[in-house]
Length: 327
Image (tube, rainbow, N blue to C red):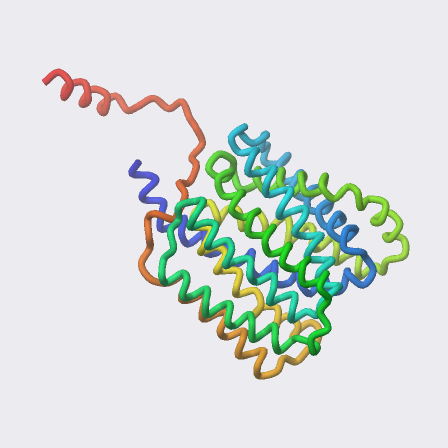
């Protein structure tokens, strides 16, 4: 077990780096969805994104010779594929067409709170006070960002319901995925979860086929970008980090996304944020810093799965144990 303990500090740094990649790419997805959503309907956009992601992940799996996940990983893969890759993406795309961006951001950001609650209950991660305090600060920041981006309350009841559905399926998908990562690799769980989501969205194939010829090249490229980077790459780095920390902490980390969305909109869309939006973004980042700071706990992280090998024990260790047994 010494090699596992020695790897923990390095694994923690890699997990933080992977989570950072995920949050940055997921933040960029909001900008890409805004562009692609002008030419693609919610279901077609979700299916196109998942198709691109499945192809990219499939190529990587073949190159790395990743086999099928173990049987024990499949319940979590099926659940996360249905809830997170499938229903969440359709509900989010649809919801953002029915409500203003601020309301959507506020409602979807209920998800990390649900992740912490479900993770503490179902995954026995507990409810660390520092995590809860950080999430409260971040949610307050997300609320400020949402209010600053609101267009005056033109939200429909359908849109509010869809955004809440997106938050619930997102949280349930994350909590379902974590047990699967105890048995399968991050790449396996992500790849087959994405494939399951693609199958779930196949009823929208007719819409996608009919919309591709009329869509602009920019919109189509954004769909491909969404599949390759915020889906294939970001979901894999998310799964890698999730296997090495608690679901609650990973959920809290995503509160950095609203601040990054504000920055990216400023840089790429020339949307100059107001002081209230900037304040909300600062609160989001401060809450993430609080939730991920402090002393490390040993109850939350799941054990990192090591490949099973047939390595024989060292002769001196066997001899020593036999000598002790005969004394």
